[in-house]
Amino acid sequence: MSYAFDPDIRAYVSRLLYRAVPAYFRNEDQPPAGREELRQLLHVLAAPLAIARQNIEELHADLFIDSADDWVLRYLAEMVGTTLIFPDADSNRRDVRSTIGFRRRKGTPLMLQDMGETLTGQMVVTQEGWRLVQMTQDLNLLRLDRVIPDIRPAILAETESGPLCATHHIVDIRSISRTTGVFHAKHVAHWAHPTLLFPLEEGFPFDLRDPLTDPDFRFAFHPLGIFLPLRARRTGSADRNIKTDRVPPMHFAANPAIWFDRAGRFSVKIGGVAAAL
Image (tube, rainbow, N blue to C red; front, side, top):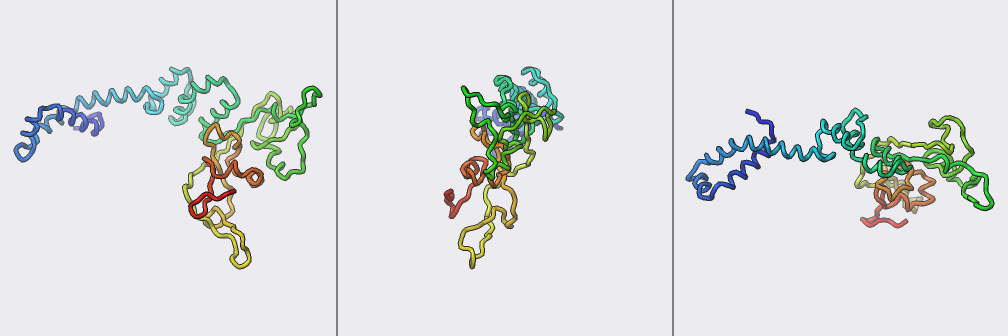
């Protein structure tokens, strides 16, 4: 006969009952004098108690968003005043878990960015359009960063647009889309990086140098020597300067400390010791 409880819970309740019996009866029940008939009887009697115990444990687990059953999510969502909008339980669980924190921050840009990351599971970058618009300078309040960018640095190609944008543009009055309307005082753009990242704990480099003609150390991260872009992941609010999951070559050369030997980045070791920059 099958019961609606976990067998481990029944075994646990059965042990509790057996421990509650006086030692005299337990000694008489154990081999070689006994045949453990008392233990078997208590195991049968533990079935209804196991059902009650598991029911209590499930009710307690349903009070918390991380341990609640999928069917309980809509009730927890109603308690915090939100509506389930996703077809899968994992996305709804992340949404309900973060609702209270999102409301406390009242729609700030960082909250919108965190919401995008929470709901999508990907890195999201939020840009306020008014911060990227050029301004006519006021002699009483100079904003030297809001001027026409210097086109001489080579890194300008990576900072001209997109999530890494750090230059200022004239106002774009077109409707916001992937390529238009970002540079507008009333618009907010969200850039998502849908890269599926898999952690690599340790790898061995591929030697790119020619020992006869190349005295310098040159290795590739990929074990086959293939040139692939390095990826990084955001780990918390302390690394907001990471605006893309791909490590751009020019950005890495300009400030390698952002990408090297930090949580979510990569680390190079020589002989088991972290290499210096």
